[in-house]
Length: 167
Image (cartoon, rainbow, N blue to C red; front, side):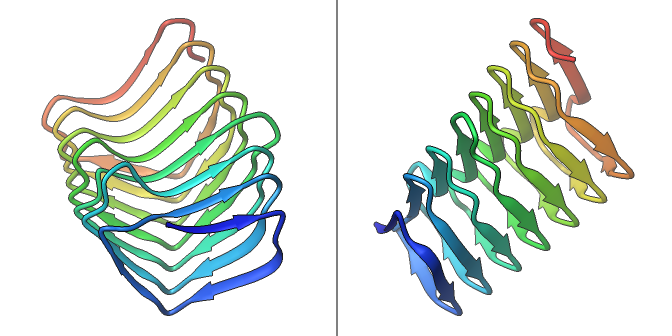
């Protein structure tokens, strides 16, 4: 597991990771860019505890979960990533986090394309979300993200599901 703990300005670029993950915690300030990440157990990139990294132009393939964002004041910038063929979820946001998710390709999840729960907020712009076997986008348990100009299509079941006081 690659980890950034209280890192300032860490750059993690042009690496290939298989069967391993990246954990950004304790207010990590990192730039994770142009990496190929595949076949992970758990989240390929876990962002938590007030971290605000930039996750840009990474390729995720056959990960359990591509990116998991959790915790108060956790606000990553997630942009121009390709997430394909995840087992559980491509991008999962929970616990009062507030990510910016822009211009990503979120394709062919065996589970969900995106999930927001437990008071998660966030801004979701111009993403392509397609081919998920469960729900393309699920918002529940008091989550309240904003969605603008996304393309959501070709899901196996539901395109967008809002439940459990999600807004």
